[in-house]
Length: 192
Ligand code: QAP
Ligand code: CO
Image (cartoon, rainbow, N blue to C red; front, top):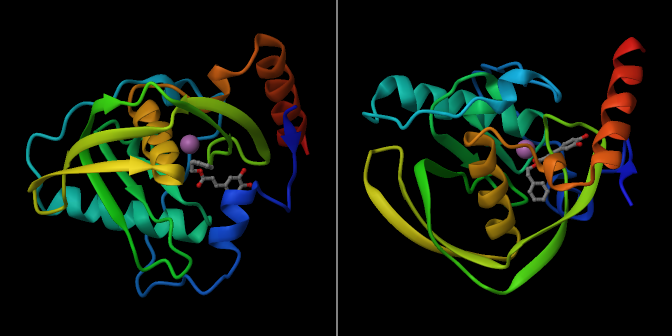
């Protein structure tokens, strides 16, 4: 069942992000595209060079994510169509993980279902089944390549964010009926 909640996000988000001490020194908050904005379906281009422009984008994306608050954000969601993802699963917001040009090298055959949400689809949460663990290669904010084995919430989050870079929003895993209901719900909410 899709749930619609304005004040009580899904378990993962409640657990990690309820405390509001996330203010950072210089805020550059970027507007977040809201589903069903067609720009959410653009495919992001690889970053050719990790330079100060990209580091500024990473910083602004992190601030935007902390302010929301959220646990993950892809550049696509702030209308920048380059392959950059930020994730912070910590409670103190001091463990930013940056993934530039992330690639899934391996996915486990084992699947797991998590209740997901998305800053581009506020108030909507539903269960999505994905590989339980993934091996990911990416560049850090210095342009250095690294690999990680992700499981649990990190595996869900990185797959969700890479989907954004490929123009895919989590609601597209849900039934047509649910997607129609979500669109109707959002249109109503936008009318106020
Ligand atoms: C992706 O999503 C994710 O609806 C990151 O009202 C989410 O940070 C991966 C958020 C859950 C795995 C599990 C959503 C905040 C944040 C909302 C987010 C909302 C306020 C979503
Ligand atoms: Co999302």
